[in-house]
Image (cartoon, rainbow, N blue to C red; front, side, top):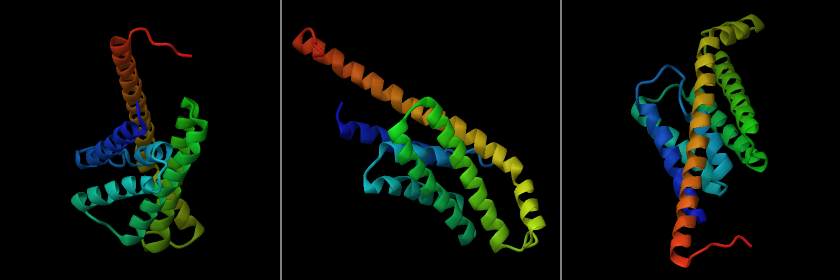
Length: 184
């Protein structure tokens, strides 16, 4: 199977993941971090980071935009997940995929909630206010973490199943067309 096919499969998975934000789901149980990790891992080109960010922007257009300060922190977190995904590509093992998802979830939680605390008057701008902000955000973090782990497993798993199936199909077609295949 050629690289163009792999990129097509990866891009299709990312677009489907972004579209799933438009379907009713529990708060913060979304594929966004998983989508960005996956893009970082499999779309190495410079435009690879644009696909999850543009997909997020398009889905935000339909869902609705929110305070720019929080949007910047969300998009920054997505970009950082992409960077983590690019490092993951060098050490691609199932346990590193899980670890990358956990780290990306924590980074997203810290950056976005710090942004809420720093830019809005919802919490006192003190240590106690910061602790309160993070404490009250824990139920959302639980959903984010669960969603990130679920969708990371789903997206990476679907990709590997599709590639394995297509490789098997290509190998089978090669055997049918040319007889026995040698792996020398």
